[in-house]
Length: 117
Image (tube, rainbow, N blue to C red):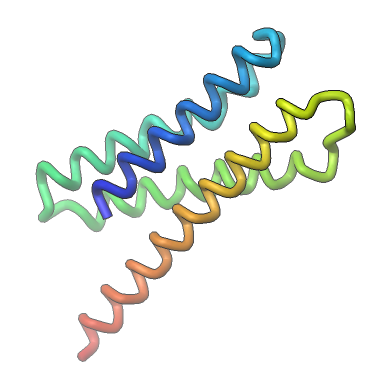
């Protein structure tokens, strides 16, 4: 789960930066996925380094991923046809964060069921 957090968190960082640069650096809010993905990457690295605290780090990462998903998914209905690049950045952030959330939830369920048996 640590490597997945590092890779997908890094992808979210890149999406945020590309969205900011390609749209002309007009709105700093397009960097919000980057600001929230940096803790995901850090948590992934810390989990790899100190596996005994993985539960804490992955809970922090899932909260950040949920905030990215909620924020980007809430922007989808407000998209207009003026900027295809902006729409692609928002859809990409939504999709990557959704995938990341799916893996986190699957991991939490697996950990819970293995703990109970």
